[in-house]
Length: 406
Image (cartoon, rainbow, N blue to C red; front, top):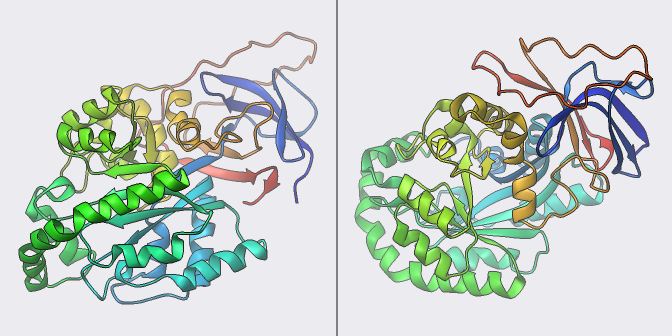
């Protein structure tokens, strides 16, 4: 249930600045943003008030669905566990990334997910979800079963993003076979023999299926006006192909040259929060921090760690010298604009009251409140550099459309 309320004495993170002030919410929307001291409302004691985070690519639901290789968890339990985790991380809008298509019959992405779709419908109907859940379908183009596995999603209004992937070893994300071997034998639990067999067979599957499947999904996306993302572009030629196909989002470019080509094509460049936090890619590709330093980063994704979305954004101050407002735009305003979520993404009058209260450990003391309400306050709190590695953002409260969900 939404409520009318005021949050005061907060460091309010706006798209271009931070102010000390208050936010008034009515009917699930922001109706006023004021600077200065107030005696009315809930005192946030100088904590940051940020827009709710928008996550456009997380594998976290898949992790809950299959927490160990070949261990399938009950769908509703997996969904609710995932939902609780992302909400606690400050994510109020989440694009659940579901991969479809896999040559490995034992893999999650080779099986149908009708049980999950049923669980999503039930959870929505019963009001069980804290975050606003959308679907991001990741289409593995060389897999023989990708088109078939997409059928249950083809008529769902919740499918708001497609990405086109090709994880053939020896290219894109897996240009280095050694990194691919570590991933497949480690996370997926494959034997070395199974991995080597996959390496030998994958080029033939790519040759047979990748091009027709790409055409199929592009036609579907354009007909349904669903944005499409490329995935792991490595060369300017990869980016040129994406642009020729009308693709507007570049997910995880693996090289500086690919990111530069994406910027020249006005694509939204998305990188992983874990990449920022770790200081580099687990696949040995370009570091997100390097792209940020070249101003070639527009949005972050938590990828496989929900808590990395906020932490990664704030670390951009340390790694690239970004202000907090610019960094928070990568997990709020920028993805909202790219995916035409025009009712959210910033703390602005008229937008949804998707808000998170955040405190940084070992942060500097909050500005002292102005004791005299008639005294004119300083209008701005200068945008501060993101925290040092010793500082951790703690999400203390979350509101979605004005309703307290955490």
